[in-house]
Length: 509
Image 1: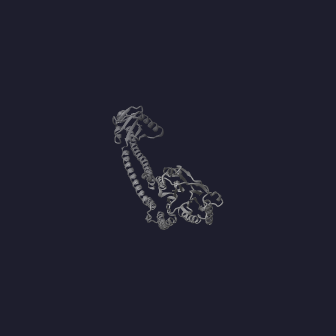
Image 2 (image 1 turned 135 degrees about the horizontal axis):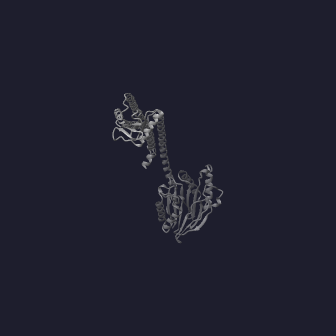
Image 3 (image 1 turned 60 degrees about the horizontal axis):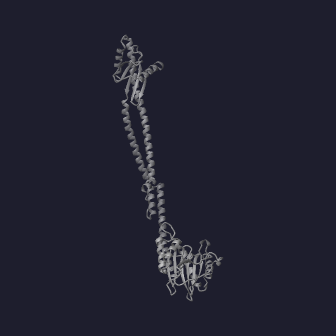
């Protein structure tokens, strides 16, 4: 991961681009210098040897003129060639005189040989002299660093003969060696210049950017005191000043937010204590055993449960789930408690009670924008002295009825829409009736139970809840509650629920 992140860094990108630029620059300068120097060395060498050759030709011409005027024309060709050879040896030790048909008249040593290309070049020299007046023909062998000259004789005794001279360009080798050294020195100098410029570039541009990046990462990790200490009067200095001002502003705002959060946490803690105080402290009585599990997603809960003693050995049981969670939902539960506490005795029919509470809530919230969607689901049931169960539902999840005598699990009837939405559908709130017997249990719950999520984002779901209930439906209420909570805790983290979760078990003794 570190290698990968380094390859994405600006340092790596600039380094690669800079190395490529340096290579291109050094290659360009090396090629230009090499080509120019090679051409210059070659031309200078050719020019110097050409001057020597011209001097030799002039010497031979003077010899030829003196040879004719002295009356020595009767000398044989080999003797004349010997005298000419003595003159040539003063310039080079590699030469040969041969006839136009390739016959060697004299040569400086056995190492000097005449090839067919040499004969052809000799004929070219004769042709050039006859038609262009050029006194010699030359050829350069760049691979062997040699230059050859072909000079046709004009004296009578050596007529139709060609002088072949060969010069080894040892000087070129020496100059090339010197050239290579110069190129190495130039490349070294250019490389040192690029290194110096790279260090300068890094100090001026890259290091400040890396420093700004490091400090921004420090702030991201929580070090609000991180600042970029760059004292410069250019745009990068202005950027560092702007970064420091931004960091100061962020630090001030975070400190303010942390202070406000502490105040809010204190207020929420107080609200939690207040809400805990308004929640009923339910204890078992002569007719019922109660088991309750309630866990808020935040410090306060939008779930509310209650029990009402209606007299005549009749009891009412309420479970409410306010839309959303947190402080707004908790405030609604306080209103709900007050409405139900005041009117359960007045409206003994559960459906009538819901119709009244619905109109009261809608009237109370009429000043609130309807987009706020302040509504809640609820389930309310009354169990009278003859164990008749009367229930009404307002969009809530249907509770489970566990009949001990029949060893069966069923759902109570439901219907109706959540309270606080509309008063035009009050007819949907209908009271349903059934009979229960000793040992039966009613399991009420909110959607925070089935919507609890595992670390891999899977929901607990209704099937898992039913599985827990099936595993413990023959047990008493407390043991059944432990079975449900144990199954939920093994699936999801109870300290990080996304919604308030409540299970309320009523067991008829």
